[in-house]
View 1 (tube, rainbow, N blue to C red):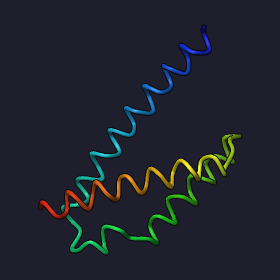
View 2 (cartoon, helix red, strand yellow):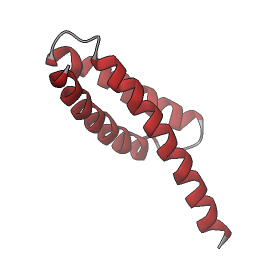
View 3 (cartoon, one colour):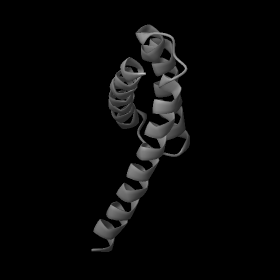
View 4 (spheres, helix red, strand yellow):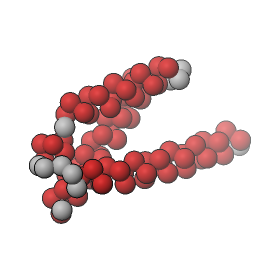
Length: 87
């Protein structure tokens, strides 16, 4: 069961980092002028390319990392759009 404990430990760290990332995303929403600036598709492409590169450097699967990061970017973009509308 050490494998499960380690997965649980890693998941806790991942979630903590996602929460931290989300806080910065919401801060960024305050500085954006409009919804197009929030969406920033060119920035999304950069983030995903960087994640793929890091995965390869670290011995991971860039395709799996890309799938995950596409979801992360989409979810945080939605959260940022909501925050931007409220601001």
